[in-house]
Length: 258
Length: 117
Ligand SMILES: [Zn+2]
Figure 1 (spheres, each protein chain N blue to C red):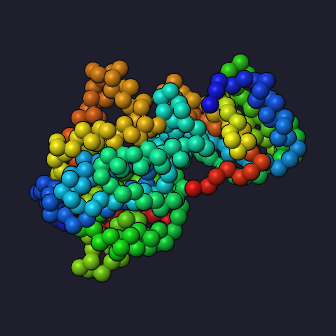
Figure 2: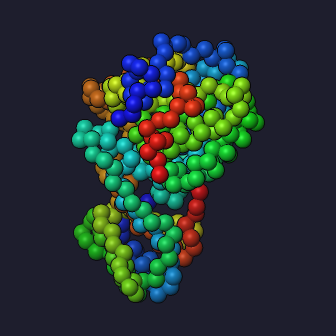
Figure 3: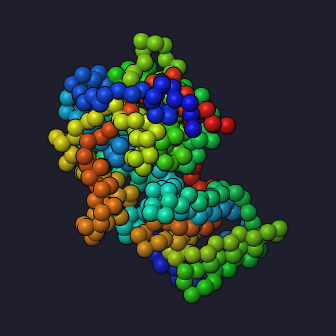
């Protein structure tokens, strides 16, 4: 484990703060940088819709087309070769629901970690410079379960880090998976977004990602009493939680990369 | 895709033999197995757009099906195939799906390279 950055702070926590509410009205622009079509809705769809409602420009810079996913709909209606275009259309529909503009980085699904991170970070930085958002949302490197999530999380962090001080948006990081383990390593998330006003649109956007979420909705309907499914749904549709990530904080993930 | 019709798949394999074809071979547990109750690590592999030439390609089994492609110096093998389709681009796609409709295995051949992102 890493040496704590602050005396008494949990390992790998860049920042320990008392939780502050996410204030959409205070934003100038929101840029979400995640690798797959659907990551945006799962992690921050309610927050994106809140910003759109407040008149804040919202952009989703999506790393890949999710073309190597294994979910094909239930029953399956996609295949390995049709999935790319299907997911691109699903993303366009979800972003229309959330009030966001979608842009693609065009990386190969599952292969983000094998790209040159500096090269991709330069492309992300160019988008930040163009849009000048007040906040960037990305995955927390090392706490995002999927290798693409961790890799693009670091790339987004490197992009923000490379900007001159004063031009850097704040970086909100999403940790996924085992919440207990994440809390033990990172502390409590510093920013909480109340999505009660936009949860219907988050659900509509989840449904728009049909190939990826049909099986989940079937499970929710069929196994209404399944404790694990219920806990996941409650977490997904409850508030969205973010860690305030210092762009200069070197995570274990960054330290251990090749 | 449709449930595999062995005769139809065999005819498609025969039609592509003795010529260079692009291969997509894949097997996947999905990337989120670590979140499951057994906390298993994911096991995933794929090869996309490797060029091979097979002199003999055979589909066997009672379903799920197996396919073997005999190369000049080696083999391509997949088990667990349940569905197939020939796309508009004349690609032969074979795949296995679990009861949730999730892809578990894929073996695909095409005279043209498969699309890249
Ligand atoms: Zn993802």
